[in-house]
Length: 410
Image 1 (cartoon, rainbow, N blue to C red):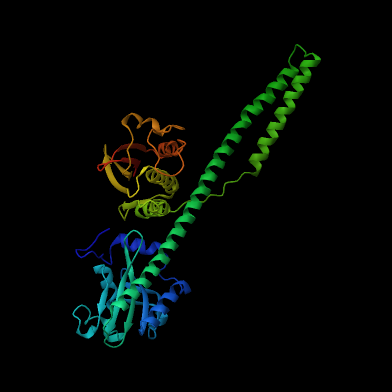
Image 2 (cartoon, rainbow, N blue to C red):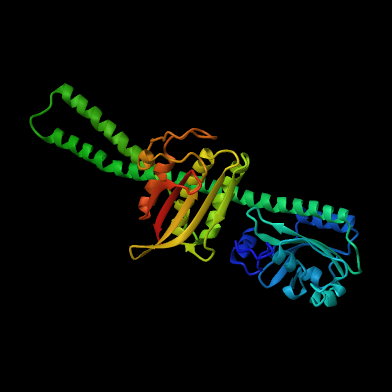
C-alpha cells in the first residue's frame, strides 16, 4: 500500500484500484442496501445531494446518489475534474468545505461551475485492509457551516456503508472458501477414481490366473474346484464394481483463470480474517500488484496459503500479528516466487522443522485456539508444492514466532 505523506493514497495506486475492483461495486446497478444510507444522509442533514462516491483512476462512480441534477443522475459518474471526493482519497481525511468559491482547495474544481457544488462534507470509505475506496458525502448549493453533530452523523453513515462493503467482501470470500472445499472434494474423488482405475489391472490378472488354473493339468479335485469357483465369482463381482464406479464418475472441472498475486493474498486473508479478529489478531498483507499466477497454480496455492494462515491463527497469542507476503527472487539464475506467512507465536523448534511436514506428524507447540492438529495440513502443503516444482520450509521470524515460506518457479 503506497501512502502519501499525509496518510492518503494516490488515485492511481495499483493496490487501491485492485481493491476497489474487487468490491464488485464499480458500474453496478443501484441497490436499496446502499440507497437507504444516502437517502438517510440527505434527509437528516437537509442536504441537496448525498452520494456514495467510488473514486476510480479517471472518474468517480456513484454507487448511490440522491439529488444529482440531470444528466448526472442517469450517468452516475463524473470525470475527476468534477470530484471533491478524490481529495478525500488523496488526503485520507474528511473534507469539510463551507463555501467552495472561497476555498483554495476546490474553488477551481469544475463541479463548482457545472454542478453548483458550494458546501461539501465527505468522509473516507476504506476497505478492511485499509485501502481508500472513495467518500460518503453530502452537498448543498449554498454556503453552510457543518456542525459537529453533522460530522458525527455522517461518520455513523460512513461506518454502516463500510460495514456493508466489508460484509459483501467476506461473503465473497466465504463463497471462495466453499469453492475451495468443492475443489478439494473433486481432487479426492479424482484420486479415488485413479485408484479404482488402477484396480482393474490386478483384478484382470486374478481372473486370468484363475482361467489358467482351470485349464492347466493336473485336474483339480472337487473341493479345489469349488474354492476356485468362489474366487472367480468374487473376482468378477469386484471387476463389475470397478467398472460401475468408473462408468458413473465424471470430472467437469474447467480451466482456472490467471489472477494477480495481491488479489490471491487478499482473498486468502479475507477468508481467515474473521477467525483472527475473534482474538484481536491483525493480518498484514504485502504483495506485488502487477504479478499474476497462471490458472493451473491458483487453486493449490490458495489451499496452501489457507493452511498456513489457519495454523498461524491457531498458534498466535491474543492480540498477535500475522503477515502474509509475496515477492520475486532470483536464485541460482532462476526466477522464483516466494510466499511467506509469519506469526508471533512460540515458533517451531529447530529439531522439528523437517518432520512437521510429514503426514500425521504433530509438533510439540501448543495450539492457542481451534482444534488440535492432525498433522495433515502441512503434509498436503508439502505434497502440493512438490507437484508444482517448489519447496516449503520454516524459519524464525524476526520479531519472534515462525515464518513458513514457499518457493515456486516463476
